[in-house]
Length: 144
Length: 109
Image (cartoon, rainbow over all chains, first blue to last red):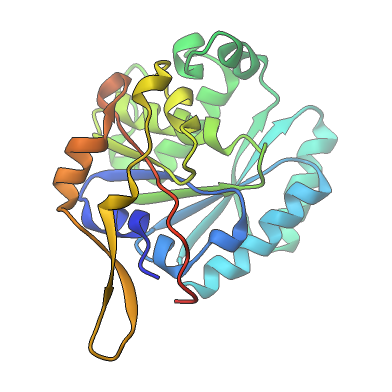
């Protein structure tokens, strides 16, 4: 199936960020054949990491060249170590380690974007580094 | 650059998608954010709070076509520019957000 979203991603010239459906069964060639970079989010829990672990080879088979891990909701150094170790064992390069961030909870409670709630929050800081990494020519000038 | 973000439900992938989108947009990059789910969670995470304005694209943006060999495929019924213009919502920092629609899968491929 040539998916609607796949067609739109492939047809636009704009930088595109696609928030994919949770189920990896939806990781079809139709949806992601135009994707350059896949970011896989891993929480420091077995089931979350296992989901990521199943996604990576599937995405490689579909031809996505650049696949990176992003650790999220880390509460302890042990959490970070668990994700780092999982990624190392599954040939997945980890490009960000986001701590559990209360500002995400607070932003959600007040129906605001995290970046509007607190532009200096840990998650914004870590994802700014991801933006530097993915689009180095557009590195921050002052602000974000 | 086309970036996709995946992860288990509840992993924070929507918050990450929205935040990365806004960071890129603040660097002067026009970003199209697409919610792969029919539920408008991404537009909410981007800071759009008016749920009345976060309708998903209608199914009519695609239709099923059959080629000579009888193989069916889904094709867009309008140009991408028109679809984005019509169904895209403007969020802060110049972000445009599109919310996906559910189209039944027609087998593999």
